[in-house]
View (cartoon, rainbow, N blue to C red):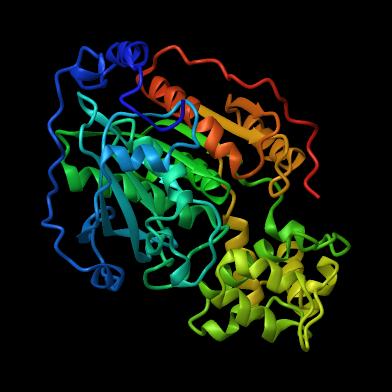
Length: 457
């Protein structure tokens, strides 16, 4: 059933017609046919000029550059989505690359790049801004998803929502593909990139077409970024969070400072993600990027710093997990971290002695403690065959949401791994999120799996 052009949408569109947005009338809905989107910018920039947008002060969400990319007709979209069940392709999609203003640390201006997907036959009515946040790709500019616009991952994660007639923006995150270093693992930084991308989408197509309401969804790192949007939405009163969908999302559970106490924890499978978080945070608190590896043990620092700052994640993980000339992978957290840096971080946490770069890092880590708005509808999706974010780890993140007073919906797909989860649950996710945003009855999870007890390591 996946990737069919003009599939049977009568029942689906009838549901949509009950709310404030629906399908075009020729797809079985009652809403008036929607006109194609127009853009507020000419979008005649080149991609290179868009990625090269400098950081300037101004209003968050302001558009800075726009390049129109090759469009996908409905047949091409259907071909790209043929592996996805429950996705009925109702439209072709126009694609754009934009940059917009955002904020990094509080008060510090930044610039983010994003891909925008506008359906050629959008649903009728005033539509929500739909924001799709990607998983871990790496820190180098070449790792930005907007540099790989035709990658199958973007098709399954993002094009699938646009193919259903929804306007979608997919932010790279500030500092990834644009000036600076992305705040990987830093929820305030990433959450602001995601929130401001919703503003940018609305400014691109107009407030008469896209409302202040937003649906945020994301996968893995992006699942946490979507949740971060809900946590920091008090900063953006013009963005109303209508629904959150987190596909195997990584969320706050154990503070990074507390993790420094766990010196015996095995680093197997964790080296890439932990190295990326440490490098990114240090790069964002020092003007000298050569200090970005200061937290790494001296015996591996040079190798770790070079690889983390230059390789995309698929290449970084094996590079850090396998021995190389002059490099032996750290087996435990104690072997991974610089002992003096670790001692200084804990001295800051325990005794208030927050000196130098370790002290700045500890302070930044302390502030990286998001809490979601418990009133926001949240769908948390997981696969019980996921080896990248194990179900027991997902259970910890889900439990943190519950602890914060939220009422997330748990939906666990038997047999699905970290990637196939997106392929096989997006159809349900689109239905659930659009219903939640309208305040309509929510469809039940079609899967019968369950999360086990929490175990982070």
